[in-house]
Structure formats: structure tokens, C-alpha cells
Image: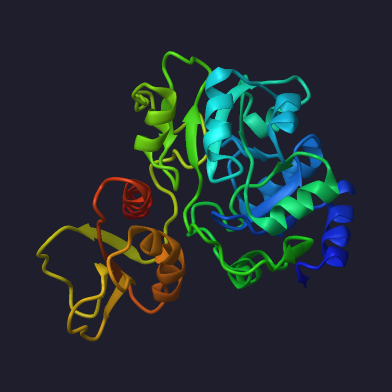
Length: 315
């Protein structure tokens, strides 16, 4: 059931959530599959619909810092980043409150929390008034959805409703920062908020976690293989020999595009490339058995795009 983003539709969808159902909703990053984060039975439905392993923790979405304090234990670093970037595409991993079910945090003492900026999502959260666990609304491991039709095509028969809020602005999932130890902030997943800007606000360098145990990921999106189309993905930089009949995806539009050549941005804009990434991979999947993707400059949101491409190519 696809609903529009009118007040009546949001009220109807809020009733589904409060009754223990699951609803797909737009955020500025990707579409999320939401349930009441304080209802373990409802959250379990997310895992079942996605085929997601229970070892992979979820992000809880809340409206503001006051709501964050009810489910997590904040600190000065979290407050600084909140003031600088929230609402927006950044997630904080903090110590969790006892009210958060273990299924949300994969049994860990921490919880990932973010305050999305998408106007439809914020209107919905104001209506439903509970924190929402909302991983990407797609089968586990596949390319994340950035449009309502992506969700409907793959999960439409398994979930209670989809709110159509248009295309997602960012196109890749949120930046995730571990803040439990303020002296050792960690970048668990690159995203739309760049590493450099976070380091500027915190006044210290972000640590890259050394322990990336796939059996016990600290946060969503840390598994080696993820965000993958069915086609084989091969990354390249500069010159590359391509298989005959393959798709070739360039960062910037080629001067004279040939058959089988595609691009993420007309002008080489990194944010445009991120916004188009998952939609293009979905469109090419099924038509090509191999997709060659050019890496972006590894800075800013380019780091996030390269992270997603690397995990797509790792299968």
C-alpha cells in the first residue's frame, strides 16, 4: 500500500506503527523501514521483512536532542555534533538506556541514534511520538532504495505501507560516529557529513576502527559485503580494460559517451554522484552481468560513495 505524504496519510501510517506494524518512509539519505523502536516484536518484523541478520544493529530515529536523551546517554561531543549538523544525515553511537530492546542494538550496550532532516519524516515523527528503528527499506545486502517505487518493487508485499516522499536528497546512508569514548571518536561509516567537518567540530581526528569483526558489527553498514546489485561490480581508476557487453559507470559524463557508458554526474559533482549512485545501479542491474564503476576522489562525500562501491564489489 503506497500512501502520499498528506497529513491524513501520515496519521494513518502512525496508527500502523503504534499498532506494531512496519512502514517504509523517506529520509534525506535513503528510504527506511520503520517500526516502534521500543517494541521488540515490531522491530523483529523489520528483520523478517528484510531478511536481515539479528547481529546487525539498527539506528533509532528521533526528532531532537531531548528525544535522544530518553534512549541514549549523551555527552559533550554528541551535543557539539548535534548543534553543528542536526537534524541531518549523521548518526551517533552512544550508551543506551534500558528502555531500548536488545534486538535494536544486537545485544550491545550501545545504541545508534540520528535526527533526520527530511520534512516528511519529521512530520511523521511529530505525529507518532515514539523513536523509530528504520534501516534501509530493501532486502538485506541489496542496493538501498532512494525512491518509493524501489521499496514497492521489492518489499511491497511484506510491509504494511509505504509513504511516497519523492527522491532522497543525499542518496547514501548517514555518517556514523562512535562517541562512547570522547577521547577516541571513531568513524564507523562514512556518509554525507564528511570526516573533515566532524573533526573540525570535535577538534580531534576521527579513528578508523581496527576491529571490524563481521560476526559482531558495531553499527549498520559495516559488513564487508553490502549495498550489492546482483551483477558483478568491478571498481576502476583511470584507464581500464572492460569486458565486452559490460556497463561502464563514470564519475563524470564522458565527452563522447558510447553504448554501455553511463555516469553519476554531468559535471563531476560529488553530491550529485552520491544522489544518483543507487538508482543507477538498480537500473543497470538485470541488464548487465558486470558493472564497472569508477571511484570518486576519496574525500568529502566521495569517501562514502567509494565505501559503498567497495562493499558492493566485495561479494
